Image 1 (cartoon, helix red, strand yellow):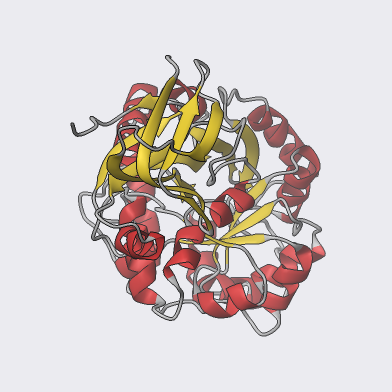
Image 2 (spheres, one colour):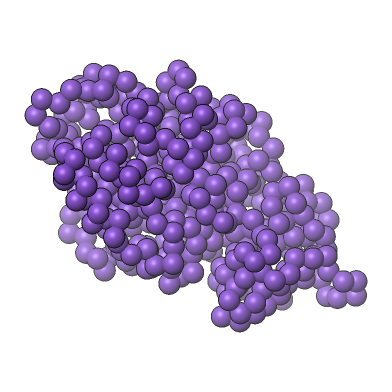
Length: 394
């Protein structure tokens, strides 16, 4: 890696902090050593440089499905069937290809849900920052078995990425497993209230999820439902806290958003997945007004057209047009980084030189940000820890 610098027309240090014209410089370790206004008389490129995007939630090892169900339970069955016959080599290759796709349009950090223990080193070798959550399943596990699984998964290497655990969801992980994960790791990522069927199962113990768990031999004998929704259950178990991120939250119940806000937990929404399953839009503007950090994520290509945080930005802007572009951009940078508990999504002295560039064509930060958020400005280069991953135009 070599030191480097850029002198550009506009530099976005954070969604609400711009310099123009500006210079950014980094050392041989890819750490920023200079953020300043550019001197007069120096060559200024007609570019706007922005903080690298943060993908708050991704399953990079999952591939596209041959038959693509758009309803959730058939989709779950298709995902389970697709994993049969997969090998460590295929999982690593898919994760590496996913990183290439993400970096191509400006993503430099990710919250990866690692289902095999193979993602961390792959992502680290490609220079990506973020957090690698080891995924946990086991609705049938008692305390002893849950502790053993957590110890094994928490010991998995994550390369240079921060570590975390992802007890998949309240309807796929037992209370014992959720508690064990919370004891072992400060940082948790949990799918929560994604479907009405999940809430039905937790309230009544019946429905399609009960049928699926029984079919898989994962419904414990004598199971009694908690008779509450997913957020209430997680709060009872003590796993809601500022270092927890909740994914999707499509079917929150009355009072759930206040519970999430008071716990300090963060939310992540995935507009591409919402569109894939033709789900109604969650009330993101209301959550933001309450002070809940809401990040954006791509989920996987099993439930999204492609892995593109630029596409998620555009989809979010279209879904919630009342949000100003700066807030939508914050969802893909500072909010997503807050949910992951990592230093990403902004450019600062001593931080990594993680950024991307678009053509500027104007001295107006507001116009550039609107063009980026609405997909009218293409990514022309990405730098990950100071290493350029896309060719820079002359």
